[in-house]
Length: 205
Length: 287
Image (cartoon, rainbow over all chains, first blue to last red; front, side, top):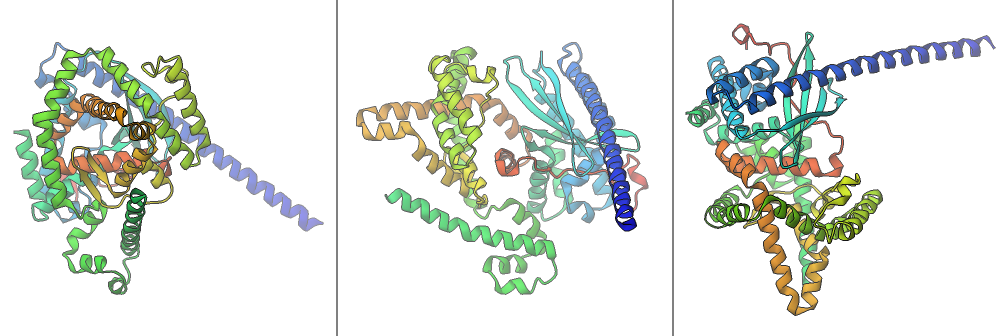
């Protein structure tokens, strides 16, 4: 009799503990999710106002875009990811110069890609906590012709600071496609990161 | 009947390559007894004998036909430049956006029965019901499909094709293939295209009434034009911003198809992760 009671008490205690832990986990996840949404909507508004501001020069636009990249994205982690195993094989100088070129080509690509955007609307649609601890914030950009482009953002919080780690456009991860492209360029260049660096340099100039 | 045999044959061809790929992956995972796999299949033996630096990338890309594919890709780009792009540009220039959108919706509505067949083949009855309702509503209230009323009624278009159906049945992508004119594909999706062609009632209608073949051709032409004019900006953008457009197209196609496959619904996309050494102060790091 005692045993059964004791057993059920233990069961209850464990159950209560687990529910509490789950609750803490969910509560934590929710704050994370909301914070990530706010982070993204602030950044989205920044970028849209920057891109649609016709009064600034292309140079200024690129500069401000670079600042956003540097402060809101974890460019080093992304650079490391897109290089895959070639990261470990490269020398420090090569890595440093790659990260720099990676940033500059990204600035050049997107500053020109969105040059003719005028009255785009950026909208946060929702968010979801991923098993790896990151948060996916889903958003969409609505173009003036009514076409909506879904964009998801992978965000991690580290030391109280949020950063973007991947951009997923219509289900296509920019990190993965870029990793594929870079791997092929490196392979065709004899397995050296310097080959990719040269190609990126050529692209900017 | 011959067509059916051709499809079956392609299935048989697809299966062994799937096996080889799975084995290779499990070899990558365990990494313990590479010697054992040597007897199992020649493809792996070759991979092991080849410089190991190519192993990972080869598995990731699955593009054994790359030399041929690159030639086809080049020919397609050339055709785009001299033929399709100018025609699309003319179409975009002459026909107002509103009308082009009507044409696009009309063509999409005509292909809705193919989506329905694939919904059923995948056993997705809710999707099948949605597709059926979309087709019924858009064909009537939407004036023969030129207006997408269903999307406003919260039944949005959801793309399905036989390539995705094969994926839901467990078939792997198979090697990447660049098709003449049609562009990026893979073995599974190429077979899928043949299947969808067979599901298309308009093709059957044209087949049995010889006089109507012209409608089928007209529609195919219109479909190509619609697709090209829709994506011309994105495609040119991809081409100019890429170091190696062939690889970029391959990566985009592969990722796009994976994201559309219902088998991957709710998948966690592998991304960069925060690590201890990825702070801005790069110079301080030791490797």
